[in-house]
Image 1 (cartoon, rainbow over the protein chains, first blue to last red):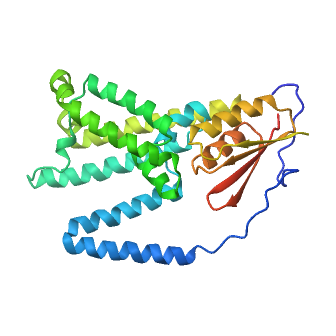
Image 2 (tube, rainbow over the protein chains, first blue to last red; image 1 turned 30 degrees about the horizontal axis):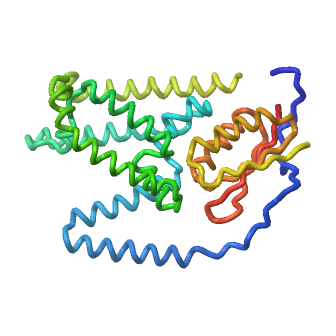
Image 3 (cartoon, one colour; image 1 turned 120 degrees about the horizontal axis):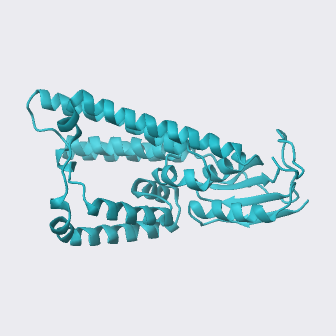
Length: 231
Length: 75
């Protein structure tokens, strides 16, 4: 605290001279019913094609809804600790990782016990310089574009025009990346170690190690938030 | 007591926050800064930062998907 005068935290309203006249808002509930009807109709049509498509449609719609209503944002989770000193979204992402760790471990272990090929095994790719380079470029891109992939799509749904431009370049970037993937694979990816945690620590060990790691990050995030408050 | 309006409509997430941070530095204690945003993410991180800094913050939804974040500099 310094010697400069401070204004007490008011619970009442802040005095303002200018105020935009509020337009009376139209009820949006009819639109909600139209959207719900369209979602249901498309869902039925997709499910008739294949039950998997219908399932993807439903989970996609639910994911988008939760993403929008909760203002969940992976970009902000990475950026806000530096920019605002707030770590609420970072901790939300860590909790999501912890929940996903348990869920994925359970699904994979169930397949493993039955001797079936585990789903998502193709995503266990070697760690290499390509991982670092890609993460760095994606990080720059998502901060400039104001959202990662899911966040950008969610905000297009909200009607934010700038991000429609972002998604065009997101697609161009993805194609470019796919075009050069062979080069990256040959030069870096095949030389990297391929790590699947259950192979290293065992199934229980892998879950415990990952949860402990997440817990440590969570504690650090909480410390960071409180440290900033004292300044 | 001054009142400044910062028009950040059409600007994506970190931009309104950085602009608000810079603008608030120039203001005196007791001045009011009105940040106009239409990006839902800014509606979350601008108030979060301002409250953390100890300022008085109010959010008004002026239209569907358009908000005014009223910040009174408190220190």
